[in-house]
Length: 220
Image 1 (tube, rainbow, N blue to C red):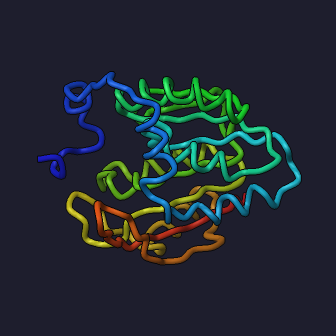
Image 2: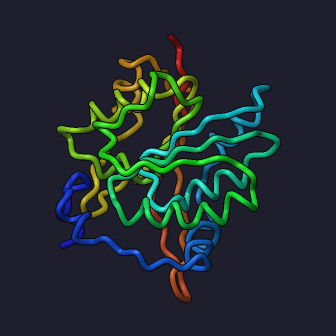
């Protein structure tokens, strides 16, 4: 059953390698599938700083659909993007999609197929901002500390999360206090957070799920 699969199960991801790619489908998933996806705390933060050159790390990037949405919302910045995901299929599709998408938006990018707990960039604090959407909730308890530690080590300024916060099958229910304590341990203070429902269209109807949205800022 899909919900019993662990994020770090390499055999599952290898079995699920899928090289079928359709740019129209990818574009729909990026911009229309979740029309109420809230990335505002991160967008406002990046827009508010004077620095023009921004390096962004996407942790658990999938095929880059959330990143495409984010990049389209950020104005007047030169973006260097890096996406990391455990799934070979996701990374393959992300590379295919961004080859087209990056020409339209003019930014540089790179995808890495790796378990993020073992991912290391060339140097620490290599990225200005990092973000994770619907990823932390899937990380096993034994891995979450290392996952967050590595995210903090890679990030210079701010970290953004948008995670499920209800008892969804297969997800780990963790509130802002849980994340606040762990991120603080590695030099990041909870700057802003909110809980809200995200409405997602499905067929002729829709459903809602409860989200924790948070921004952490480095304090040392």
